[in-house]
Length: 474
Length: 154
Image (cartoon, rainbow over all chains, first blue to last red; front, top):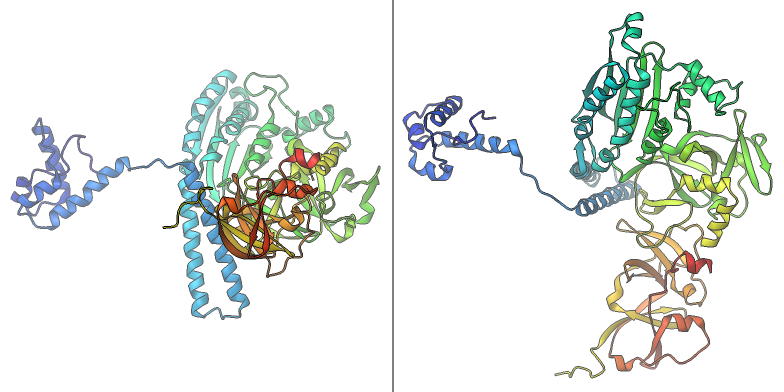
């Protein structure tokens, strides 16, 4: 970059360049600065006009010409584009990727050798399409800096309100993620920073007692990991007081008094709705919104949040978010003759149900016992009308899912086909809302697969009203 | 040379066959014609909605027009045809047996629909055409998709 005064010309007057043909570029800049300082009104002479007069070697103006755009790059030219246009482009590239995959599959089926020129050409095409996809996605991407920038001030405010000493360290501000994700990240992040300082860090005196620096450290970092953005909020406070968390959960009736929980399960209790560990409600973080709200807003973005905590050393909240909202991580399953996609973020675990674990409850409803607790069983094929007879539990696979507000249910499907990133397509654009279905997508074979609406399915399993509504809509 | 028809400009219609009957729609509403591809069934859909297919990235509902018009459900084969049509702001695929012709007609060639009891006729048929001794029903697509949850629930 040229560190010249703002109004100096990009290169010295032509006469000077002509006088010293061997002048190197930095000397040239120095001269330019001198000229600018010396001459009160430097002539903003355009380059093209100066060049013909200068009998200097051709290399020199060329060098100067390289420098000039570099100076202009300080304010890189930008254009404003309608978001719809970008989204249309992203859509089309998604199709390109699917089409390319289909073509590759057909070539393999046609029995062409890997080394054939067609197969090799296809490989190149694949690389190219991937590159195009990345570039197009990058149009919507923005660095997380805009959100991270607000946090130091927040940290100072919370610290002074709670009488704690905090040093906020941010890392990976340049990490890029979809604009929509950034916009919706601010609230949960604010809440987590507040929590980390208010609940996570100890008071300075207490930190001294335990031999720590009185100034607590909260580390906010972002990085890309396997196609997702991972954001961590780590504090070096006391860690989660598991005894107290458990006691509160028992007091609030969230768990049974004799429940045997692992450390991890205990830590995750803080995400339970209506949970708050602060013994006194402070106006910093105890405002009736708990970590369950944070978890829900992260899930709405298709993300996951987890916590690791070590007593005396601090806690780390890790959020993993998709880079874009146009695609979704899905579990591809089959039910009846149909292929369906379940959002991966909602799935807690998959299990192989046994007949003895499944119990009939009332007319037609079934529950399954998972480690001692009864969870409603939703036969996906049956509730979507893909089959008329209920699936035998042992013939299928069960997905334990967690919907909004922590409501759990088990979805029974025929088989799991695998995990895949899918492009979300609207079903309403040309049709209408379908109960139990969130959206559609297009799989590698070019066929449409439906994405399950987990919350609607869970709700349907809880009330008798919902199935009737679904019937009526049909 | 050809005098502009007093009954309005000539219009182009695309005619197609379902079973033994012939129908036509305004060519301006037709976006493209493509072969049958298996559709993904939709839950809780009315019987005439065969499901959805992928039309270059858009999710396109397929209506079995025969079933919609009360002629009985089709059993689609590779010879069947999907007419991709624009209905207001939505795009819908119409499953028919075969596309037969493009007709250029003037408005005065369209005869008013005779009064018959069939509700299907009242809902869809806008007029009748006599083409080379065959009868072609001119249908409107406005009500081809299930209108809303309201209609379906009623």
